[in-house]
Image (cartoon, rainbow, N blue to C red; front, side, top):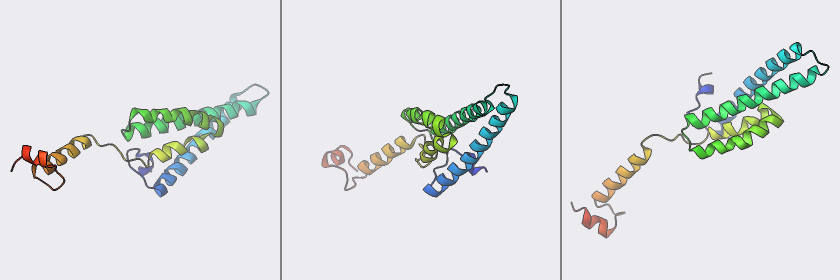
Length: 145
């Protein structure tokens, strides 16, 4: 259960599928409970409509929250928040069944580690300073041994 809510973990396709199915079951259960409560408390002629609306609302909120959590925990770029433009209408039309596909796919993206760019820059500088074969002639002259 802990691995299901570890949004920072990069998953393989199989683990992303387990993530999707696990959260789909939670979303269906939550939407079902909301639908039952809305249907039981509805005093209108359309109890089915009230229950359906409550289920869609829970699926919309749950799918959006999972998507935002995955983007935040993976430390993905802010441009990934644009996926909410797709997640919101899909989860409104298909519930958690469709709304959780994109967050599950985002869990397969690598997590951005703080300082990763600095580490690459430092390794490149050490390679150039050591006069490695990949360094240009001008770079070797500016960094003699």
